[in-house]
Amino acid sequence: MFVDLWALEGFEKIICEDPAVFSTLMKDILNDETGFVIVEESWLNDLPDLIRQKLERFQDPVIIPFPSITNDLI
Image 1 (cartoon, rainbow, N blue to C red):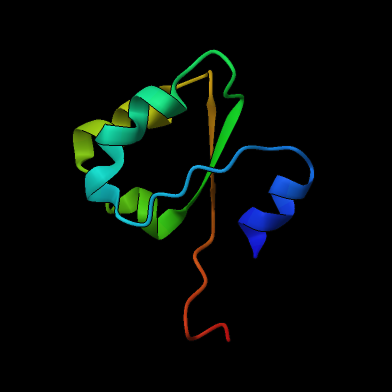
Image 2: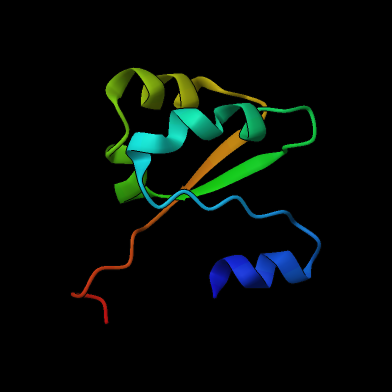
C-alpha cells in the first residue's frame, strides 16, 4: 500500500523484496533521475555488508531507511 500511494504522486516504484537480488537492480536505481530510495531497515541490514556500506555513503540518490513493521507492532 505504501508504495502504491507514492506511485499516485508520480514516483516510480521498483520493488525488491529480496536483498540478495538488489545488485541486479542497481543499474535501474542508480540513474540520474533517482532522487531517493526508501527501504525498510531490516531489508537494508540484510544486504551484503559491502553493498550496504556503499549505499549508506551515497549522496545521490539519498537512501532513506524507515523502521520495519514487525508483528510486535501490529
